[in-house]
Image 1 (tube, rainbow, N blue to C red):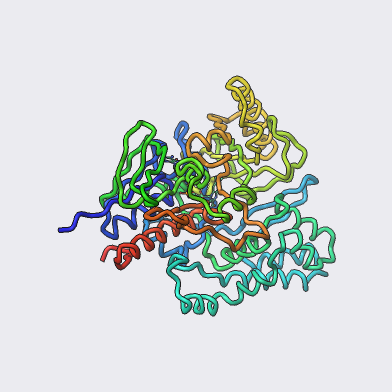
Image 2: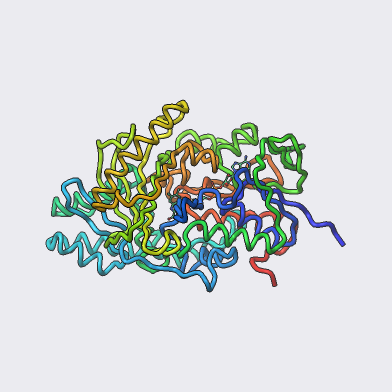
Length: 498
Ligand SMILES: Cc1cc2nc3c(=O)[nH]c(=O)nc-3n(C[C@H](O)[C@H](O)[C@H](O)COP(=O)(O)OP(=O)(O)OC[C@H]3O[C@@H](n4cnc5c(N)ncnc54)[C@H](O)[C@@H]3O)c2cc1C
């Protein structure tokens, strides 16, 4: 019998585990090398005194249907036991003067609500709703770009036409320009809508897609959150015979004559392989593990010019009291205000996880506050200043908590502050950018190639390939990596064990 070929996967986040699952399904031997002690990467959570503090999922595209859905079922992110909830409200945007804008996930309800704010803007509101409905026709491809035939593209064009029409019609427009283009008469409604995003160049198409996925009830939340997702993927990978090497860090990808041959770890050991897939942070892969030797003009341009999601601070509270709210996710306008040493550019978010009983014991609450905090503020901080800054953030966050949930600070059992340096320590994410590149008006429909020019038997997977990041595309890219390897090996790709 032929010996199985071996695939080494760098990184045990959701994309690395996806590569591993499809590698095992397709008859390869595989090992995932992960520098942290647990699987999941950014899709994670941590426990403090029986509270679970989640770091990622608020919504997952593909919880109901489509190619993302298929991939998430094949990788055990979704199965019959996973309960999905579809929130009625995406978030509540609270202005400094106390007025608010609620974003309902049901489009008809949102339309009616917007009309109560400005009855005279029926035309603009209908146009917004029509654009969302059209954008919702986008269907992700099930196969890697390099394997798509002209017929595949033609079929996709046919199915996705309304969405592509919107993408083309509003190409180059950021969210602000799009709202301006609606010609809204009411200054109040216009201001409320403009306040949704702080990021000036956030692509309007990305916003329309988000709302479109909600409209189709195809972006739910899986009870158990991010850690649940990571644990189910790990279970699937190991049950298929895959092996994790935890607390091992790759230092270099070994290349001979333009072909990847294995990896060298920081402990000096070398692991040989027939293929290497890197699902680690993109910058680390290209400029450290490959020493910047394998590049392309596009890769260099992207890494020099595409803007990153600003790194963030997460303050998590475990509270010995059941805190009720009508709004589980609130975006609170706070430009110019300070939390610790960070002056906020736009807002902070406050999340009440009472919709997921796995996050806190009965009768208790898990409240999370997140805010953008540029990496430059943290980059050179010494240990003493770092401890002081965390303390100051905790104090300021308690005041915020008290503002939203009066009296709750007396019931705090635990407070945990995670900074951009925490993100980097546990995941290696470049500059703490937890979702990679921001989708802007310039790059929203662009993506990077999984194959690097002049380097064989090596592929990239993960969130750094697509502006916007996210779990479904990251996991999908793991599947695509295996489709490409199967093509190289002359094998028929299988998505499931037959
Ligand atoms: C606050 C927040 C909210 C989010 N909300 C959502 C949401 O609602 N929906 C959604 O879909 N997505 C969301 N995301 C994004 C989503 O979590 C990420 O896009 C996704 O988890 C990225 O997965 P990945 O496998 O590509 O990368 P990562 O998770 O970064 O995995 C890379 C792995 O590689 C390992 N590694 C790096 N370098 C090395 C090395 N040299 N050797 C060995 N191992 C290495 C790291 O430790 C890490 O485990 C959110 C993220 C955050 C932080």
